[in-house]
Length: 387
Ligand code: GLA
Image (cartoon, rainbow, N blue to C red; front, side, top):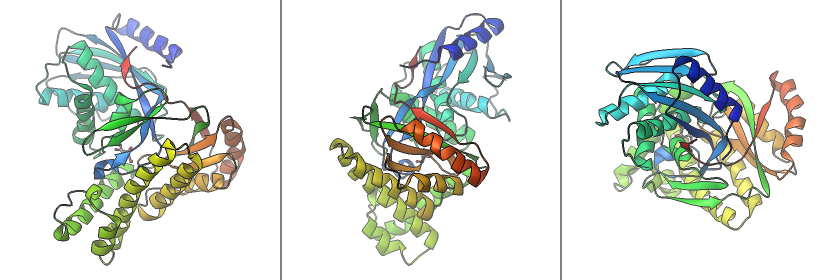
């Protein structure tokens, strides 16, 4: 497991100054997703993995009902009482407070605590730093107060914190990936049953390069929630004819054509993309199992087109980055990743070629968008654990 020792030392030193010695430190990673985007809340499949960039949360019990939080990177603090949990107005504490709120509402006896948080997951880059914070928190509380919660339930609590306290109607993928990740493996997760299987990732052959658009779209959360509703509207129409269809997971492309093609054009496009993507992931897993990375990569490009043209969650910067690598001989596949409206593109690149590629793209990106192109070569690493 890769640990950012310098960062952990900083967190420990801040902790020392403020509170003394932490009882425990949790590491919870960010995530990538190879394919299966916007399928999780449609009860389909996803193929994520946890990465070697993580959130670190150091915690210590208190004898009262206060929560004292410090963000090491931001040099900010926040204080709250367990008996009056409200949104902080400054964003980062909400991911922690939201988890505490869910734990309390589910009857788990949390007490007061001190915490210092830090991390090297780039913020707002679509690598799910928020899910990592939520997973770190639920794991830390489980350890600190001996709550005896199993991993799947911890994932569900983390998602609930995001849904109910933060207010993003996200699916379960990000938290599941952070909590269940394994080194060198991707997780094929059935988001309906929560059954999962690990598939080996061929890191000896393929590098994963993330290219950061540097775009943080303010509409991301409202548009995301809207996409969910559009999918639900599609399901309601299909269910009139096929009552067994409870989510887009149950619908076929044929049903979408039959029931939605002549209706609301937006709903039709959204549902068409999702049903195609669920199918594409299943075929993509077969490619991976056969080590046919070229075929898998082509599916990533197709996913990108769907996200851009049918689901309409891309942005000009992500479209341009995917186009730039489209016919590059070292790139097997690329697409925008995560919720959309900015963040990173994920690129599967032939081993050892990623750095050169990023170097070559940076000036082109700069001349088109007047923005530095940040890039991250990521490795697939272990999920949430104690340090
Ligand atoms: C965000 C959400 C996830 C998932 C992706 C899109 O990351 O948090 O639940 O829906 O977008 O696949």
